[in-house]
Amino acid sequence: MTDLTLRHGLWSSRLAFVLAASGSAIGLGNIWKFPYLAGDNGGGAFVLVYLLCVVAIGIPIMMAETLLGRRGRQSPINTLRTLAAEAGAGGFWQGAGWLAVLAGFLILSYYSVIAGWAMAYILKVGGGFLNQSDAAAVRTAFLELKASPDLQVIWHTLFMLATLLIVGRGINDGIERATRIMMPALLLMLVLLDAYAMTTGSFQRGLAFLFQPDFSRLGGGSLLTAMGQAFFSLGLGMGSIMVYGAYLPDRASIAQSAWAVTLADTAVALAAGIAIFPIVFANGMEPTLGPGLIFETLPVAFAHMPGGALFGAVFFALVVLAALTSAIALIEPTIAYLSENRGLTRPEACLRAGLVCWLLGLGTVFSFNLWANRTWFGKNFFELIDFLTADLMLPVGGILVALFAGWVVESQVSEAELGSGRGYRLWRVTIRYLAPGAVGLVFLRAIGAI
Image 1 (cartoon, rainbow, N blue to C red):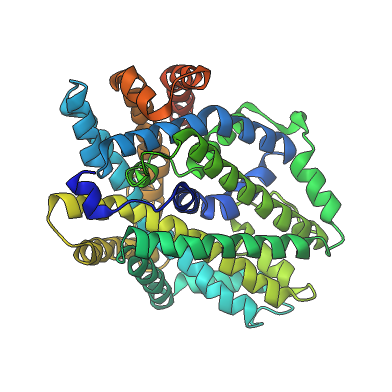
Image 2 (image 1 turned 135 degrees about the vertical axis):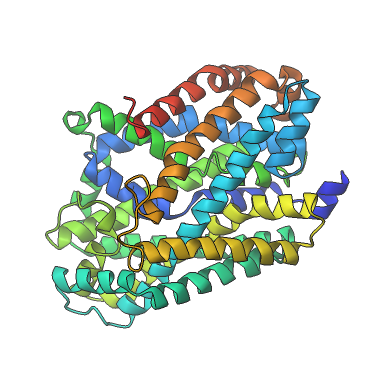
């Protein structure tokens, strides 16, 4: 065990890694983005393509990030520098580590603000403040929240503090202990919401929409959207899986762990859809309502349903919990780097990184009020950060990780981490050719090149 491993610690078991990595992957992308993308792209056909992309692209890249992390046993920046030197490659590859860590850090800055909205909605919906409200009243309430920098700063601060308190306690006493509690709680809330959806009278219609493919509604753009969602939903390209892999014990199977994490992530996305679409249909709404589905559409539905206040509060608690498990993974690569390269204790690293991330989050807060008329390249601050990370940095980082694992890392090294056999050979072909090509298409579409 290296000195750096001793500094950070190791997961106590493969299960601990699976829970933590699943928490990293399960976030707003599963509970907020996946349902509205499925709604916008025809339901079942989109879901089927999404599942195929998860298996063909997501799992190989997740295995690559995990093996790189365990081999390097450091932050993504230092891991790629060390492994590049080991393979006789240039220092260029360290830049991929910087790209991943910076992307995760920037994402957390606005992720915290959106999670803060969900925290506010636990009280709004659970407290009955939206009872019997119509769509116009619910939309007005949401716009008032975004128009208030003071309220947003309060919720943003509370969410960031919760994240830092967990990460500051370390791998075993902080992240591992928290995810052992939060992941079962998250799954329990999903089960409760799915059971509630069964009482709406539109449960069968929701299932049919989600699982009966209608390929006539699936265009080329939908195919690339499904591919992109499969990549982003698993939390790839932002250093989280790589740094969690650095804490994975040598005896744990990377392939089995990646499959377990992927199954958990996909199950949560599908369970969220199973809960949401029957509620939407039961209230005579359309599933193609886009990003406003959570904060504008569902509150209206909950406001007019028996027990809606209680189950609405449970739903938004689920959103916050999922966001929190992702948030601790988004900042961990930065904490690991500061601990390794700046000699900071974990609490010191959390304080410094958290303060900078919190300050960046103010830009997102002000994007909806004080800075509403300020734009950079035609985008407000939040839109610019979202574009830079989701559309540019993450896909480029994913491509670089796939190329590094497939072409730079020597085969005997990756085989030692993954094991030999047909599965390894299939992974190596996929990570060399299919994965970078597929993510490259997502990137080209994001920048408007195709």
